[in-house]
Length: 338
Ligand code: SF4
Image 1 (cartoon, rainbow, N blue to C red):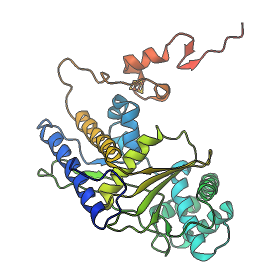
Image 2: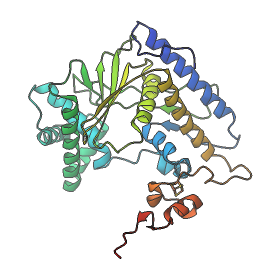
Image 3: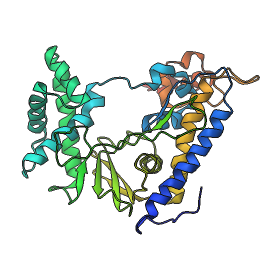
Image 4: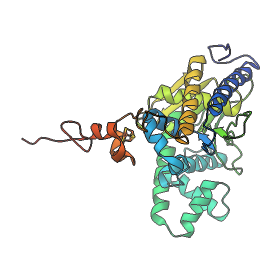
């Protein structure tokens, strides 16, 4: 990676040049991978987001086996829509009032608002639930989104700090920001379209060449992710690639513990994040190629609790061994009553 400062960027223009260096480095590594791809392999479009990076870090064999169904957006559900609905509802509430929001009332008011003219994909999905009479789906979505709002307000504080903008896909919300479009490296071959996405929940500060802004990610549960430092590394790099400016900090918060951790973005963090991005692409390309002689799909399998619900566990030797460990049944501890 090109020489860069190791402290959060503070001088005008520095964070832009720094991000350019990260882009050049990552694009060069992707180019090398694509050049080494078998001529008859067709991996399709490769999308790199945090969930893909976490899957690869958890068990690369399972990630590769996921195939198109596993790599695609699985569609909205109450769980996957909770943060998007929560942010959208909270942003509209902030636009209209300075009162401390009532989480469930805020979500219900937003749902009523958007049903007549949805302005985002998630609003269209909520409208669809409503039109098809899926009251259980609506209630579950409202409850989870309200929980997201309550947790976010709890860790960020109320009123929000100055210059904090929720990231919302809603052009009708004047105080919110739209998320950055994914970064698409220009590769010399157009064989594999790659995009790297950054999806912060909020941005604190002004996105400017000085890099004096933080990207914020909020999770309802502290155990939702891998190690926090790994998440911070991925998000620092993905945001730098997508925005084109290196943020000063990545802020991670968790509703259940009330934690709010601020990771300064420095070169080691960006390097770790770049490695995560490149690993996702490497495994996607590998999944499109025939197995190399003398190897199996499960050479790098990483057994763990996820083996219990892994769709490919029946064929995976390391996974079967993990599930059959002594004093375990299907990976779960056996309680002895004797
Ligand atoms: S069974 Fe376990 S080790 Fe094997 S691929 Fe699935 S998650 Fe990985």
